[in-house]
Image (cartoon, rainbow, N blue to C red; front, side, top):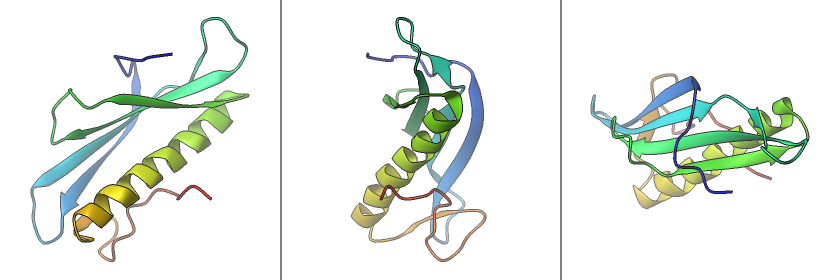
Length: 107
């Protein structure tokens, strides 16, 4: 399934460059929904530069809405971890100054 629209956004987080007020990335998590032709659920996420709407829409899937949301958080954690590595560890969110971006990492 390819998503082009995140749908209803239920949560956002701004990721900044360390020591800067400049927003580097905006994380948006969409409302978990049932797949059109299945009983399972998916949860869309979008990570875009600043406030651009052009970031790719990714999704995680689960057997219910809670699992889809939990896996979406890990998906975002993994993507941000890689982005932070590529930025030399300079990404931060307002709730932490040590480099923890506030999302669980996939195991």
